[in-house]
Image 1 (cartoon, rainbow, N blue to C red):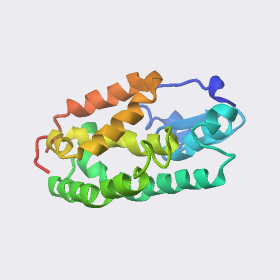
Image 2: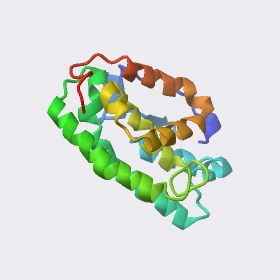
Image 3: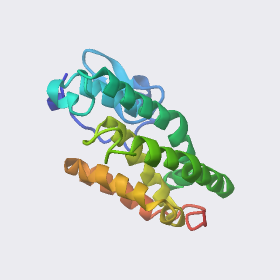
Image 4: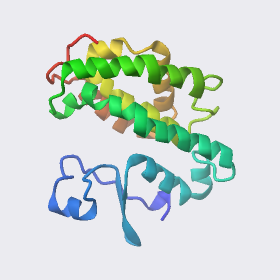
Length: 201
């Protein structure tokens, strides 16, 4: 299976169906279902898999010929999954109608600013426009795209450091073919009126 053979299906609102859970009991997206094996889910794993089966196209974003660069990408993607992303649900999952404690959102936003954004800017982006790279990799997609959830609380987004916003926009601009999908979730977050959407950070 290569990138050219992937059929994209909209699973929004369908991940709790019996059919979907039979394929993926974690009922999350993205999920890849293959004729040749079991389904694969978790966004970082899906991106690695697509790169690994896509030859030179995949090497551009996850270079198999450079184990050190690949290790840096893996390191940052693991950091994103274990450290960065857990701060986001309390802030942004109100966009899905899931009540979130505003005080917890404020606490997690402080962690983002004081710890995670500092590491992102001062280490991962210290000398390059993308994470350890002059060109975007799957590490950038992993890190930059979920930052959209902060927009669900507009005043929180206003308080995000400008360099973080600029980085996120660089990543989005690097993938113009996906702009329709980026704009869809961004619009949802900007229009969010969930409980606490207007809270101060």
